[in-house]
Length: 194
Image: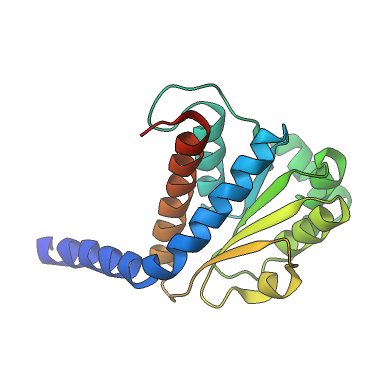
């Protein structure tokens, strides 16, 4: 069993190295987009489903509180945090609206929506991107595999960071590393934190 665990570590490292070179400039561009958003006194909205929702929550927590070192909190909102509102929207209208409705209510021009999805095919995330565009909110899509349907609804102002591999577990690991890279870039560019 120890060898199996070691092999999983090895697969994780290999997957990160496989997509790292391609993703590095895109992650840097996404970091710049988020820094510009924050310097303009706008906010970052974040959403995802399942394990991607957990990564979205980690990302907003790292922005609101701190990442590696103490610094002022940054305006970020995890759109899955209010379970009463989330379930009300799903019950009253459609599950596809659980992120779109809050974006239409809270999103302002200059904000950035970060969408996390391993497949890129979730209807509620596609609707979130459409709602963001309606409100003048640009999008950073952190996807996996081939980007799915989300890729086709992004516009010229949006960025896609696609971990183009097929393992769901490895995609989540890369997505978590991606949001940690974004946190590091934001802290360094805004506060000079090394």
